[in-house]
Amino acid sequence: MELPPEVEKIIKRLNSSGFEAYAVGGCVRDSLLGRIPDDWDITTPAQPKQVKELFHRTIDTGIQHGTVTVMAGSGQYEVTTYRIDGEYPDGRHPAQVSFTSELLEDLKRRDFTINAMAYSHETGIVDAFDGMKDLRAGRIRCVGNPLERFEEDALRILRAIRFSAQLGFIIEEKTYEAISQIAPRIALVSKERIQAELTKILCSQHPEKIREVFATGIHKYISPAFAGLPWKEVRISSDLSSEKYIRWAAFLGQSGPETAVEVLKALKMDNDTIRKVQTLAAWTGRHLNVQESEVRRGMSAMPPEVWDALIQLNGYGCEIQALTNQIRSRGDCLDLKHLAVSGQDLAAAGIPAGKEMGRLLNLLLDLVLEDPNKNHKDILLEIAKNLAI
Ligand code: ATP
Ligand code: MG
Image 1 (cartoon, rainbow, N blue to C red):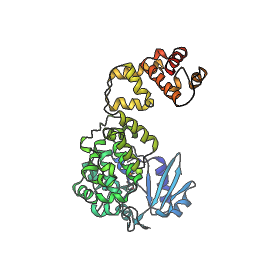
Image 2: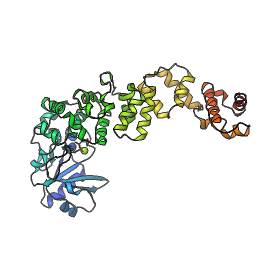
Image 3: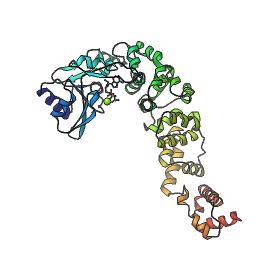
Image 4: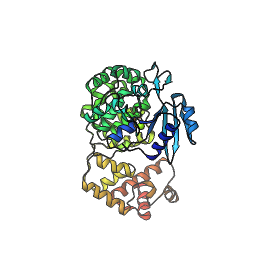
């Protein structure tokens, strides 16, 4: 297995001070699968204080949990002391952690067999729980007793589904049964963490695995709006761009804008994503005639990238795409900012400012969306004067 040079250096420096050190967890799993790891984690019996003494540039990321970030080259690497997690009184976090000198103890606390392997050039792969076998079989399986592991930390039930979506793996039977059984405890997990896992599922290669969140009963304990989603009708194509708002819109669009907003607010989603999904949900399934004016009206209702997303989501064909391109390359007016008259122009022509003026401007925009040739100051002023009488 190959290690990035910085990881090799960190491991070597720990070794030369008498400490074992291994790459561990997701990075080992991903390397074995031929995927590029997002980040490299290192595990060692050295305590945080000792790690900090060995490296010049470090950040105290989670000293109390044994984690120090080491800056090397242009990268950041988390170096974590071998650790045993204590009791989990809240179904999510261990009350205390203790350090250990045994790698095996550290691997035992990890969630799935495929995530519980360590590697160093010196030792090779340390695989105490048959992670390789599960990796080859394409299987997510808990380390140890699944019910106990999910009772400790209920987030793991969503992580199981998330990894199965990202890797295209099945969930081993006993692990799957335990997920269904522990489902109510997802209520103990913060909405932000739930949202992050659901987003990873939807943005993965297998977004359809979101169905497992419902099939296992987890959905009932996320929020009332989520519980009521018509999941059996949901079809998400993995051909869609993998941007967060597009995948969420594909998932929630059919339920309409109100429900979509309710679901996302309960999950503490960011406002930008909520707004985009709301717009897309309002337009989901809407039929569009192949007509310039209709396309301009749609385009004027949302930012350009959201319109492009809607073309994908509603499966608008190449004719709508071609019209979109023409409208863009001509630079047709699509909003009040590009209308040939402004509020000031209307005021100068003797039309009183106020609510009426706003309505008048929108009416003019609507005429211009219908026919861009009308977007000239003299034409629009003339129309405005007649309308204002
Ligand atoms: P990715 O980074 O792609 O999300 P990962 O496996 O690296 O996947 P991380 O959340 O970065 O996941 O965690 C790193 C490692 O820490 C995991 O591989 C696993 O060994 C362990 N781990 C993380 N979260 C948990 C958890 N909730 N319970 C038990 N072990 C965990
Ligand atoms: Mg990781």
